[in-house]
Amino acid sequence: MSFSFRDKMAPSAPLLTVRGSEGLYLVNGPPHFTESTVFPRESGKNCKAYTFSKDGTLFAWGNGERINVVNVTSKELLHSFDLPKAVCLEFSPKNTVLATWQPYTTSKDGAAGIPNLQLYDVKTGTCLKSFIQKKMQNWCPSWSEDETLCARNVNNEVHFFENNNFNTIANKLHLKKINDFVLSPGPQPYKVAVYVPGSKGAPSFVRLYQYPNFDGPHAALANKSFFKADKVTMLWNKKATAVLVIASTEVDKTGASYYGEQTLHYIATNGESAVVQLPKNGPIYDVAWNSSSTEFCAVYGFMPAKATIFNLKCDPVFDFGTGPRNAAYYSPHGHILVLAGFGNLRGQMEVWDVKNYKLISKPVASDSTYFAWCPDGEHILTATCAPRLRVNNGYKIWHYTGSVLHKYDVPSNAELWQVSWQPFLDGIFPEKAITYQAVPSDVPSEEPKVATAYRPPALRNKPVTNSKLHEDEPPQNMKPQPGNEKPLSKTALKNQRKHEAKKAAKQEAKSDKSPDMAPSPAPQNIPRNTVSHSTSGDPEIDKKIKNLKKKLKAIEQLKEQAATGKQLEKNQLEKIQKEKALLQELEDLELGI
Image 1 (cartoon, rainbow, N blue to C red):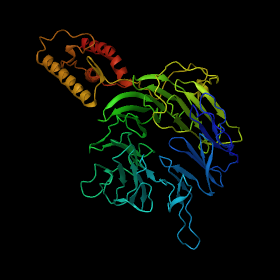
Image 2 (image 1 turned 90 degrees about the vertical axis):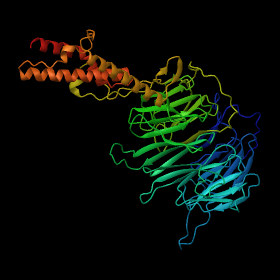
Image 3 (image 1 turned 120 degrees about the vertical axis):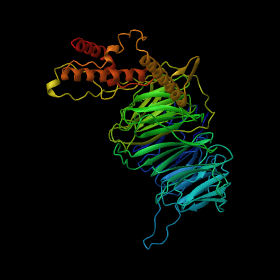
């Protein structure tokens, strides 16, 4: 294998790595999309794993025989390790260590297996340490960004190593049955979030600690316990001030969902914690922090799902309404948000400018199984990969304005297994002003195929009625305060509604106390004579009158709710529209008395 190529200049755009039955190779990023010469294409189907370093300068891959490490800029082969069975690779944040993992095996006589997690010094190529790591899940040690700290979960304890010295355990965090932990991003002081599942009637809990203060009853920075949790996902924000915890149960005991049941919790390092109140019932599909660390987006609720941005008080800031979506992706700079429906949905995407809450584009990436923002904050990668889907494999590069800039479909007898961007450190690509005009593209745009609904033979020659199973709720801002464009907080909205309801009740009480002084009501209100308890002597007519009054009273209540800003359902709005006809019917019946 020759690595004699010389690079004239660093790549102007992030590279793409493509792995599949056609082999492993790199592709130059936008605007060229030609095959890169960082290393010759690794043909064959034996490539099980690859990884870039966090800054994108090093690339490592396994070809079924060896693990090779290459410098992306100089194209120089740095190391080649004899590890034919390695299936997982990871660089430490500052490129000091390469971690490799291969499946754990024991000998036939039952003796303990050999260590299967290796840590190599990237500079010298020597093996620094080997560990036994039986599970593939969470196999890789976690480093702090400056590599001062490295942590591993070992037999329900978190072991901490300092300055990549793996021969000495510098510290231990011991709690009964620690299931998972997540180190905080960013500089010192380092924090760690740990999850302990509940047992024997005791609740599960997540605790936040500051390294190395683990001892004593008050050592934890924050603690949140909950009963409904078989597994949790912990998400630190970029500034390491708070963690979002998605707690999930395997089974929803109410029978409302086969996804199980999820709750979303907020825990801050200052000790504050809260359950995030989601306005719609149903599964929580996705939660994402903005890179600003001041807000997060949740996609939740039975389909069509709702999407809402919340602030650090867990109050809703902006509601995107409902739609066919199950994922949220913030751009690296945090100024654009993509809401998408992948997997069992059709691949519809909504690209939003989250500073102005304006919709930029609505592209459709059908059958997508993968989505990733490019580090430049302008381009998007979507892909259809095996084994999730074994047909129509390929990938597309989009501009966020909805244009497809590049498209690659693998041949029908081949498969695409993995595709991803070369990472870059924050700040390498500056944030650019958002454009709403679709950028020009040489790739012909495809109209997505719209599947027509099945119509039984008896209805095929009749006109189509536009009836929807669900009415999509449009995106809407919370009510702005007079003279203030900022949306109202949840508490302010609640107080406003209470105030308006009290006002309406007072006015009603006044009009009830002085019926003589009350002005003649407007046609849309119930006439005063409908309140009188006159009887016609005919029980049938009396019954009809009673029912009409009941309906009109319900309509009045709905109108009051609408006046306080409550969103009414379609059938409730239809009820209000029938008010005039009901009043007329009531008048006719009463005149006949």
